[in-house]
Length: 453
Ligand code: GLC
Image (cartoon, rainbow, N blue to C red):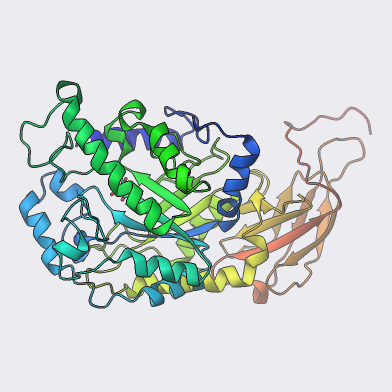
């Protein structure tokens, strides 16, 4: 419980812009800046990823791993869920087609959560879908094959923690638990096991991304963060690694709480749930609407980040209609506004425009996202550049605008006002493009009193 809050505390502080972890993207593995940015380029343009939490907890009665760790269910009863993990309706082709349809360019699947139950036929433990469940097979390989076939990037979620392993210090059944310093040989045995499984993950599928989790239980030196990353890159040199290896990764991963200001990390990704749960929960009907989730997506875009949106298949591999609906809505919206999605960069803060904004790579186009139906005129302020045109992106239709109070004596730019005809409003979020004469420049001052007229 304590550790759980420690981790959430760290994430919460990060969301408020106070970093208590090592600088993101500053991996200790020797690498030039250009190698780093080259490695990150697909991630930077992908914008949307689909997260999949699937495991024995997908039976749906209790939460993933935490339920036994926090004593809501006994370890034995939690593990019994494996008997119902059938994967009988699992259709990796349909999963990947839907993910592709959503407009996502990558997907991250849980290969092993903190409970230690692996979804492939690992040779390091019998606790896996082939040997320990009626699914009786490796579930990751067919998924990866489909992901490759359909041209997406594959991310492997891997929990560093293993609460089932007898040599892990927080092994749940071991009442005494142990301190690593009191029994380093035991910790070494766990590290060998962990490196063994990680090597399988890294070599079997050569993931484009390794999405670590659970790092908060040990420090960087204990995990040997640098050694782990070096090991992965020795055979998979371009693999992108998230920050949950005590900060030694390529990008930051705020969770659930959307950052309130632009994160300091160059690359970041918000992981986010559709209802309130990471894995399938029967009683969790608190589903967000596609409009709410798309708004979160453009919020991330406007701050230069990605959204990793989580879906929750059931134990038999079937997808929830509520998840399918959201992914299809994303697909429809992104298709219409593609130009204002993949290649965009962080925009200007909400002070300039009531809504979200991004800019094109050449900074000569400002995109405006309106997740609402305006009452009267829409206002855009403090843009120093001359505006050539404003258009609705889906239709390309030009929207007339008027500039007010562009005063010759003042350095404060004027204010632009325009109406959006009802027929151009999108059902979720309307997107406009503001074409500028040159690279976007905004006024950042406090206003000005008259000095001449
Ligand atoms: C947290 C939770 C974990 C979940 C993950 C997804 O670390 O502990 O259960 O899988 O977030 O980001």
